[in-house]
Length: 238
Image 1 (cartoon, one colour):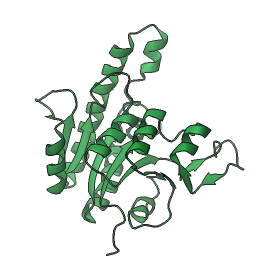
Image 2 (cartoon, one colour):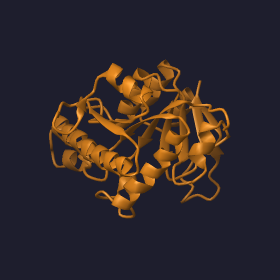
Image 3 (cartoon, rainbow, N blue to C red):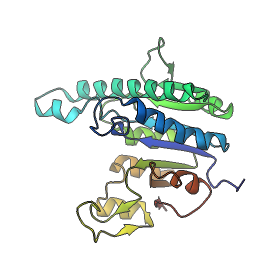
Image 4 (cartoon, helix red, strand yellow):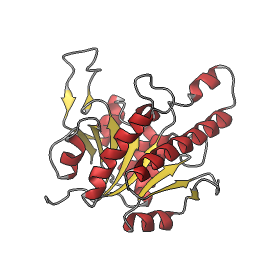
């Protein structure tokens, strides 16, 4: 087997990834598809952690537009990420991958509380770790949670899983002349306001010299190729 470029990764998924064609709710087929992608890299010996959003279940922006308290809207989103985490955990365990959900908000009946050293130990024992409930604090996105948890577990890379094959200077679905970037610096992403991750997450990755790789998770060869060091997607680094 080829030498792995990245041995411990944090996979950042949007909630919509579980939503199927509609983008809403939890599509069991989509959960199983993602679980199979994770199983492939797990069987290669990669230590895999996951952060997933909740846009398929709750969009806080809609609540804010009606005057909802920001903290309340954010906590609702955090609860949504735990639901998605449990759905993905179930899909993984049904195909034989031992998985643990660690929640930043304590809910012992359904998830372990997040403890950094415990998360690292689970990874070392060959378990997939799913981090739920964001950072546990309002005003922070799941992008920031992904950057934070990746830094805490000393991940080699944050893999931002999307349905496009990298970062472009325009929407490739609307502009056929859009240019794809093979590599970008953190500063370029911030200055160009490219929608890789939010600015807080980018800054946190920059401060910790943590690379971000944006790729198409639904391309069967992309994730495995990236882990082997092939030029896949767009790499954001120093």
